[in-house]
Length: 239
Image (cartoon, rainbow, N blue to C red):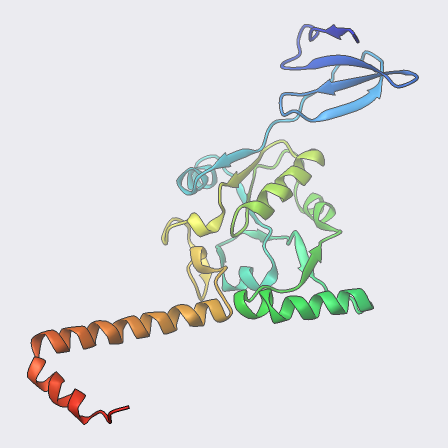
């Protein structure tokens, strides 16, 4: 059984473990369970990266107004333009995929006929310059509140930034869709929580609202004016 050593003095939640792979290697596991393989050597000044903070909308507001966090929006261009937090920075984690190789054309066509049509989502690919663009605008010590619509992209973006050396990164759990109107000053034609709604799903919702209103009105009319309703039904041709 390979020997397991306790953490050296001055280290927090670090486990050192030898694994025999033909040469002597070690695996260093930090408090956030990231494994970092490397050759066995002792070095002073080894640091452990801080974990990404996950907060709710109200806590996020406090991070911005009290703790001086800068908002970094990583959504695609379409959602950003519908609504975004005022004075935020926009660096999309995914960008529109306009490649024209045969495989991409097929995927884009399928996407546009389903997700694009029903949910208004653009066909995208990972932004290869995401980390570099953020690093060109902010120092690693900058306090960043990373936001997206549902919380998935912001979590992925925060993980990339942490790996790149950013030590003060926070995300809103479940994204901007949980932010109530008025929590942040926003820019755009929609509320922040509705910026992800588009396509036929939105139209279907409006149709359902109209039909529901008509049915309620018909029910009230029949209830309070039964005689007039009966006369109207008599005018309908028998099938």
